[in-house]
Length: 375
Ligand SMILES: Cc1cc2nc3c(=O)[nH]c(=O)nc-3n(C[C@H](O)[C@H](O)[C@H](O)COP(=O)(O)OP(=O)(O)OC[C@H]3O[C@@H](n4cnc5c(N)ncnc54)[C@H](O)[C@@H]3O)c2cc1C
Image 1 (tube, rainbow, N blue to C red):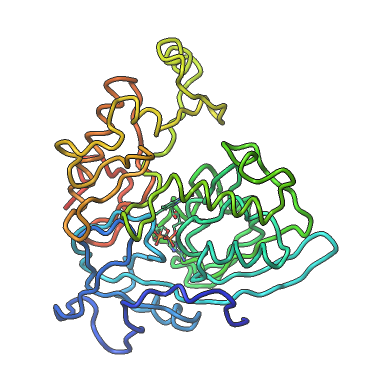
Image 2 (cartoon, rainbow, N blue to C red):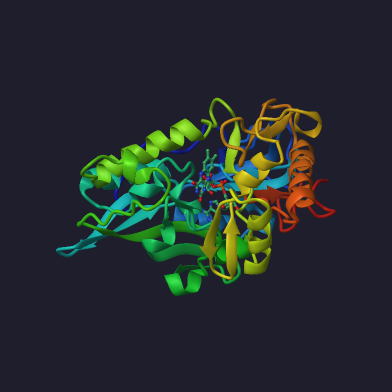
């Protein structure tokens, strides 16, 4: 693997894989802050960085690894106050040009490369396609997990292979797109969170620009004669104007998925609310979750349950943390209930959270707004 041309994505916290130390009962001073962009009060008993395939293999052969949660950049996480166990951070880096023909390149990128840096690097090399996905936070290894998407593109459009360690068979494997179960913000990796640790992805990018400009203001922003570079810059401008920078105002991006309802329900809703945006979607009609939250008057609200975390004043779909390091997963749940109940009461539609919620054992919670959403 070549060395990384991108910036070092690994945060400061964490330790190398210990050879002999028990991670089941670590001393208190080993507690690490959990790296995540929502800035909740949250720590973990042990955070272990795995920097090579040999370290990954060795780690997953220990008993302590059984329930270990995999975390990369932490930009899609709602963690509890304390994870009583181990969190592993895959820290493999490198970008390699595998092959090319007259129209395409095939590149392999390791899990800990920063996603946005990859988009910038690929575009500068003349390897096109990723430009609409600029400025999505997080690392490359997490990108297939929820099939990251923005402005009419998804990572599935470019994936040729996902390389991973299979925790069930204890072997390194490759999955082709037909095995990845990619769907809207979904994949087999999201459905089976304890199974694969993604080590690398192979992308097929185009040497010939093939711009997708049909979404939102992109066409207008990208200039009279748009290029991949101008599209990338337009995406950065639009996103920077709309979305809060998590370093200044902690958040984890869009907090709710856009709900898909039946055509009959959509018709009834648009009859009562003629301005309601609706989009065709597989299995029905997609509504805009941000519009629904704004319509119930909660955009920018800091009232009651929304005091610590609430819908951002410029984009209601993003929950922002007003009390970094103080607010907890419970506060996120309280805020979520307030929003989802208000939307349900007015429109009869339940919103579903998009980020990954984690319990105190480091397990991913499938139904975070169900009875077991907090410990
Ligand atoms: C401001 C902001 C804007 C955002 N905008 C978008 C957007 O436009 N579109 C979009 O799709 N998302 C968006 N997101 C969500 C987020 O950036 C993506 O989901 C991103 O891919 C998460 O990457 P991460 O490295 O932070 O993953 P993490 O949050 O660390 O992990 C996310 C999930 O992936 C799993 N995981 C992480 N690494 C691996 C690995 N190597 N192998 C297996 N499993 C792994 C984790 O266990 C967890 O379940 C946004 C987030 C923020 C904060």
